[in-house]
Length: 250
Image (cartoon, rainbow, N blue to C red; front, side, top):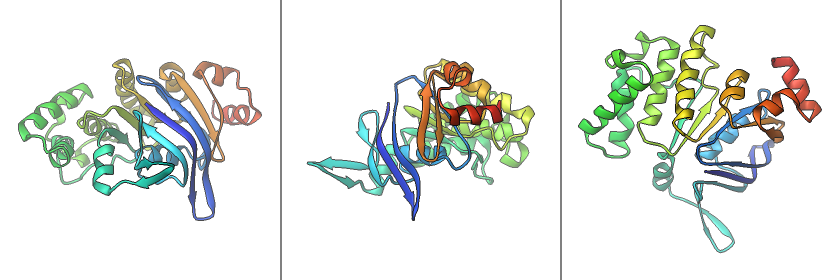
């Protein structure tokens, strides 16, 4: 579903990604851990072309992200084409990024109607199902400021799912939440994993990574230091840098 080959990303002179090679299989849940500034979130944003890569190749479901290949050269796609491709990839951010002037239901139906040109009736029907799925059936008319952080994040997940994505990206989805609200968001993500959704999750929740993840990637300094089965990486890390990191967070 996702294939990264020698992916590099610079911000000016700062080299944030220094040759990432990764593969995510369909229905796989890949969890990414590492210290702040290690490049995890940047890599996630490169997957859906919110950030443009500077070297290497990145493809989703067999198609290059943001580019087309002609001979040996890559050519950047027009914004409209990129947006259409991006609509197949759901993304949930640390901050919920809900539209404050819209109800939960309105937040969820906005993209399908505007981007996919879906009929309002169809969009509303799916939105109600999704809000029920994330445990918020009774909050369809609530505005973001009337919802807890955990509830807002669950609306954000429903909003991403409303586009019927083939891949879901989660960028530290619980880091802005009070500790007692973390579980309700992780439960929704756990349900998605059980349903077979392909997911790449940047997280500090080691318990979730151990229980739900099919693979675990530890990044530091813009490179993949270690990758493998979550239980193996967490209990028997092979690299000293991984051991140092885990000893500070577990």
